Length: 317
Image (cartoon, rainbow, N blue to C red; front, side, top):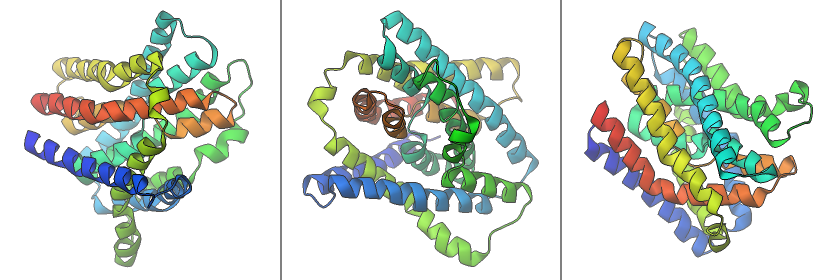
């Protein structure tokens, strides 16, 4: 992957984030409209993008094999990240809610609002296919394993969390993937309308990230020392460890891993902390102030770390 393409795509996304910052500073975007924008993204443009993207790709044996590979490897990557978060929180001596949120954010990154737009820009429709599968696995683990992490000692109910797992985005991914497997294409009128709406997702998501950064209480959050350790883990150490594991696998089993599959998985692993975890922690009675600080600091630092991780990937693949 040419470094110039990486720099250009990151610059485009950065400009959109700046537009979100400026719009928030000038009160074009208010705190209330920021939350409304998140709902527009989550319930309209993102499902539209996820559903229609599958119809732009022709099923081939390679894509089918890679998709199944991504499904399995996504589970490994997410549990590996949770393990590293658990070990680090133990070493750092974190307790209670702080430790639980640290571990959850170690596993769950901003793979929807930031990950999919970045992957779509860098790796095209095929990359978006793999990124969407990662989102599906991440969403399922969030409302199963994630709930267990945040509420230790309480019983977990599949029925209670099923509605959260089967949200509109999960349904869009599953429906699109089934149509993809059956080689069924959506009608052109759907692609021209819903598909066009989905293409707005990248732009709206980046503007939303800019608004999140503006409305966060940056000074207070920067005094939280644990968030820097979490960010170091999430943004640099763990993605490089995962990349190293995949390099070793490809060395001994050259035909087992595809370079684009590895690139997408590492990029999703390198995303800053997930925004939706803040909402989840609030619902389950945790300290959403800690979760918000994790999102704010890691998102700021990711402006530097994401190009670095991309550069490493491009040097290898």
